[in-house]
Image (cartoon, rainbow, N blue to C red; front, top):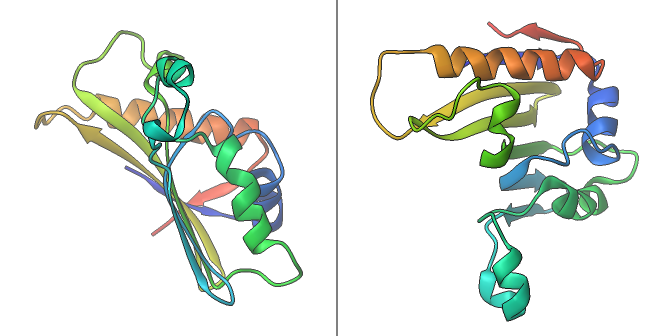
Length: 160
């Protein structure tokens, strides 16, 4: 797990709210505090979909590209939110991007985004299906996120 301070809030928010770089991620939870508090659970309600659509669903969570317009609508304007907290996870079919082999130990790879008190922080996290002292999955995920942010010109520094 690493915590990273985002150095250019404006660029990061532009990428998050208007860009497509986070589209592949699933939304576990989102919370926005503006004039009121808004909370979104990314968990899909399969019974909402038609039967043939239900068969096509491969995930339990909505993708960021589907939730992004709602968050943007709540935030848009000249004032920054008092708080923004988004918990993203990488879908299992994307794990091959940074994991060399199929892995049964991990159950989720998280990217937690928090804007609060004029600070923007991204924190990585890994949910494991069983206890292990091996940190190689965490390190692989951390390295992937560092590379992902750098590749998208999002400058960071490690938080203390």
